[in-house]
Length: 73
Image 1 (cartoon, helix red, strand yellow):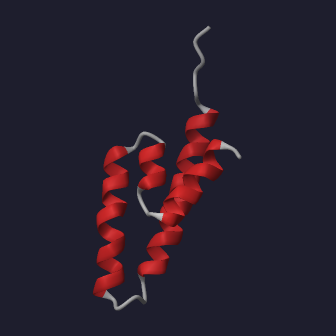
Image 2 (spheres, one colour):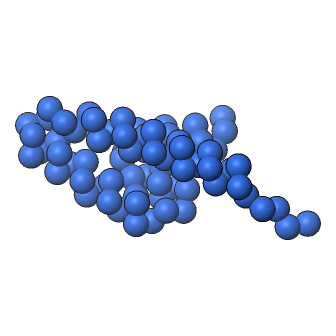
């Protein structure tokens, strides 16, 4: 499994963990706080939207980091 797929899976299971896995601590904390707020604040109507958005952004961010990674030899 590739790094973007792992990030997406982690963030889908627990929003924010995929971002933390990518090294984006503040983004991860944002999703860890916002998603439960949406679940509770909307009675469950918008919580799933946060789960999907968190997973997609974790995947995209991991792809971008992989694409532009500079390797030192």
